[in-house]
Image (cartoon, rainbow, N blue to C red):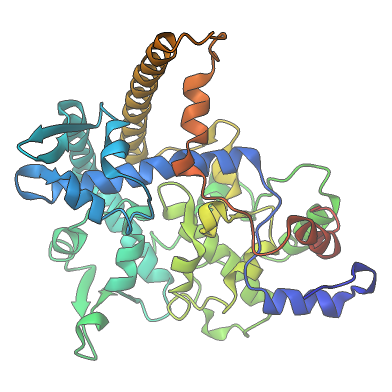
Length: 407
């Protein structure tokens, strides 16, 4: 549909918001960079888990290749694994290539498990908080499993936590269907019914309120933020049954709830689609993304790799994540090991290419000093951000009408 911008009016803006469900914000280079760095880590972490689940923790490369579609990867698994020699040890036995984790990688796996053991009380609190925010104080296990890695939960969290803390949790299945199994809160703990915003306000001796992380040039967005923030904060642990759907109070409570959900995650971010699966449990609006886009000072929405993700702006600065969970620290060591292996791989490939050119008698120019870093950041395997749903210029014009300062 072609729209002449001279005829745009508030009704037309509402039409776009109502009918085109997903838009991305004006790109923030630091937050987009954080998402780019996470991409390789996520893929290799999944490969690591695949290998750990195999007999003797050894997988055939052919088996990993079959899993590439579920990892949203293209190309040859063998080539990908060889890029990370510090993480994956690939060897040929007979006519079959096999892959196992390196000793250094296994050391990080053991360290991660040790941290998870120590973090058990934190996992219990996170799970309890999630249940306390839900409308019926219970959550579907299948849905919760989609967020377990965001929250840092171990794979066996059901077996590990629920029986051990039977005074807090129980497994229920009121319909009898296997997919309907739920975790239910047994007892309410008022000490846990304190949001991250309320805890911060208490420490500072101020009233609880949201913070805005936008440039001062976003004048209109700042004005809207101050207007939104002027009304009293509503805790996500407050029962929403007394609030009217579509009211300002309900919006305030929903924004606080999403803020709290993201605060509980390791990376202060989550897939909008996964959050949307909890629409009924957390009383979220049908088009959650539209609500998030109304509050660009609190949330950042990106469509990096065509996966719509919401980040908590205050959780990041120019250096990356502000407060790092102990699990994040371990996972970053994994990232450093990945980077070391990729650097080693790029150096070897560069030397091989030099030898080939020398044999062909080619005149060589001065190599790019930033070769390794640029290769890491611009590898074709990472180039999944193919833009939004519409022409970028059209999207800018839309935001200029909607936000006045977003274009």
